[in-house]
Image (cartoon, rainbow, N blue to C red; front, side):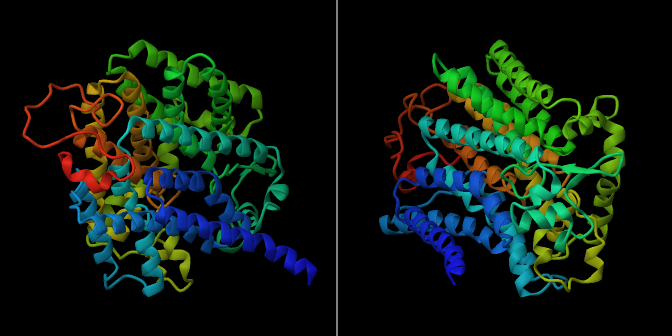
Length: 502
């Protein structure tokens, strides 16, 4: 009895702490702080709690937090009787959401429970697009966002390194979810998340703080450009405490255990270099990229030639990359045309992806469909229209980043926005390795940063002081008689109608 109470105690305390956090997120007027708490939860706790408990219900916690933040903001906006403007590219986002809801009623869709889970896997983080647009309107908030990304990735890198020193049996002991994935049991029967040696031995492929292998490196791909931006803007003693964070991110990359994560890191870095170098910071950016590369190289050297990631990286050298891609993903990519022709209207949400595991009586046809890329996943669930809308959102964000970031007046802000935009290109590349819109951290990052970029690259007032909302170096527009001062940091959504909608 005492042992049972001892087990219930921490669980009950955790549940109470979470409910208090959700209540705070709902009631707190500083939505940017609530969003920071959500970011830390997703980056540090979400994956670990899911696997250590072995319960998928735990992942509903992130939905509760998103709903609490959005619900509180909407309630305060309704009480103030203020009009809520539609963000730039908001029409595309709403159209994408509408397609998801329509596909719930697709005649080929699974039942109510699985279909609801299918809607969730597409839309659970879409509110972050609107929250990012409405409440990330000060340079100080962008600086904090960059810092949170780096801290979460560095922490994940340290955990990933610790996991890489364990045997598969030791790692499986971290909890039921880890055991299922590492040992290949339950839903992962016959597909253990381990590396196989030539002698038939197995070794760990770390998860970091994520819920699947390579989770630490994916977080690093999102944060490495942000780390470089921090380094380039650091002064004096700031560089001292940034270095340990860089070491953690380097370890995350070097212990990733997946080629896809390494490629995502590379594309994010190259994209950051191209965007930032075009904004009159060429030499500084090259120096920053060199430092980032040295951190990753140093981590690989520290781990030695027996490192699993180093071995897998040998197959994606320039001379082997195309051959490896053709062997590993060629068949999956070739299925896209076939699926678009055969299922132009899609098969309904919940047909494939994580939601399909909600029930065990899926139609036999869906069990054999290839869902190994983001594009196959979307066309099977949402049809050609849903796929086209998502691609359009990506292309619009990329075009905005390439065309407008170089016009940002403040050098520090210019580098930070380039660092936030660069992973969008990396995630598009990782879409060839698996669904990114149904996983954490790629999905929340994509939707939130899409909203942030929509504001800063399109809607931000052009005549604001450097420390407030006006980032673009353009001539001051002729006065129209309307006030366009800085947005209230506490409740920018309530005064958003004073800015341009783009």
